[in-house]
Image (tube, rainbow, N blue to C red):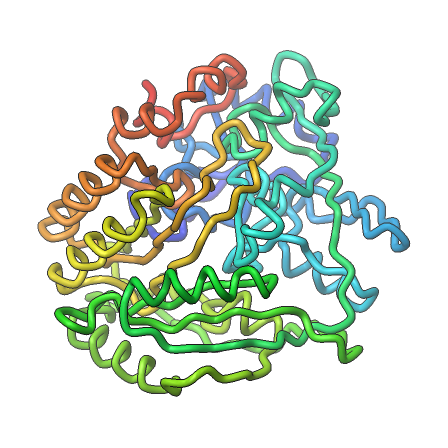
Length: 438
């Protein structure tokens, strides 16, 4: 056992004692032992959830990372069956040379497949492909009372739906069958265009999302006044140039946790101004690698350390379409006035594709995501203001990124939580679930 595991944001600070699961056959005995000694536990992947959804209520987790094997592949159909501990990057290193890519990928390749299912992650093509769970055809689920089950949309359908986006609470995922996407290249043909306001963002989104597989915007969260809401829109598609490559090149790393956060109002404003000006004011067509386009922050290993010993909190919300323009603008104004935020503030549209998960976060509308240094005197006040805007707009927050959501807001935004609670494995519980339901 060790005491080193925290969530990616390093907040809240509840170190997790870990029990490693080396083989699927070891799971029943390990789960039983933890049930007897600490009552509840939680499966833990690669620790890329930001808040407390990956932290066990007992502070004792089952670490699934060693279950990283590919069980079966159908190269003709692009259908792969894997264990839950394999990361998306490790899977892509095997599938890309054969011309297959993930249909949906989040902003880091270091998420495990089990974590991607448990949080029903989304990517830059939600308007076309929906969530990760839309492309999971079957999964194995071990429950403390029933043992090993196979779940599909037609076999154990309630458990299948509750497990996708179920935050690891319905049982321990032991394998998953995933449908991949055929590609001819790992290069991305990109269209980039600067915009000066939120209104321009919506105009570009309406135009470019209809034409391209991927669409996302960087927004300057520090800009105020007439510059408020400015950003850069990026839309793209896989190229057709027969170039298939996936490298695991060496990356820079933040070597230690500095005594104070390196992200502050001065560094944020300087970086955002430079980044904004690095893009031409006219539309440009450029090329990028899939790795740099999908996973820009992965180029800097352990970047979470840059926020210092207190860590950080991410705020990600989705606002329904009819309320999006004014409320996204209100959110950005509140963030700019707080003089805090992150370098990578992401704004994008969710489409109408219904997620298969019972508690999946995406819904039609606009989602905004950015990080904040954990400065309680400032962050708490700001989050109260942001929460009020999201609440009035009938939006909701992303549980995988949350460390502060009030129980009333969660239960309003996710009314299906009672059904998940009825299906929750009694041997599993998280600090997040305790906070918002118990």
